[in-house]
Length: 296
View (spheres, rainbow, N blue to C red):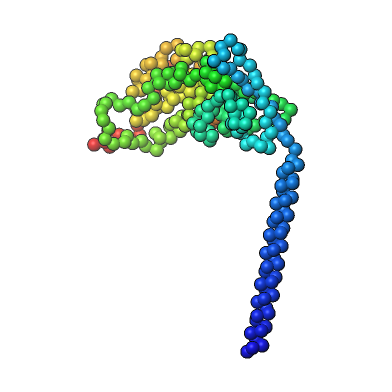
């Protein structure tokens, strides 16, 4: 019995010893790897990218707008244009002004002209060609408040003019939600997702030329969204407000709006469908559900 205990003790001791050695070697290797990685990080060459950014300060009205260059090491910056703008503002020039909020392509705040194309800075990847400066401007054909911040008041005023809410013949305090059939619900897919970033409207030449009368792609797509909603009962009134020569029919189907939409929507198609309704080539379908009966 004593012999057996001694043998077991020796085996356990060896296992414990070898286990300690293995753990020691693993720890030692980890530290060595970390040191190698640290050295590699220190010797990593800089990837300097030039950003040419539109600058204008309303507090200096006698100074004309100008482009200002900033050099950013892409190794120390996130992959998106908004990452670079935030780094410039935090580390280089706190006076640089721009809008931003969600950083996920949802709110539409950071819309601007990036490399000649209207887009959202938060979902636009930085062009990694280091020898080519990336030019960033505010959205075109809009008054500028400061730097990359456009004045959106006119855009939102046009949006509010279409009365973007459900309208019923019997007005009053609602007691239940208005239901839709699945088919009716699918008709507003590709329309309700608009985030009102104005990328489409400010890329439209027709909007540049007739910005005060032509409502623009974003507003017209939302107008169509409410016109075809099966729960809305103000179709004729909505169409009646759009029958003039400018509100809708200044669209010449250039399709810049569809090309630049950061959400992948198709304002051009929505406007074409709206034109059909206005000239009588199409009619709004009757609701798939009798919502009045369901409310009782």
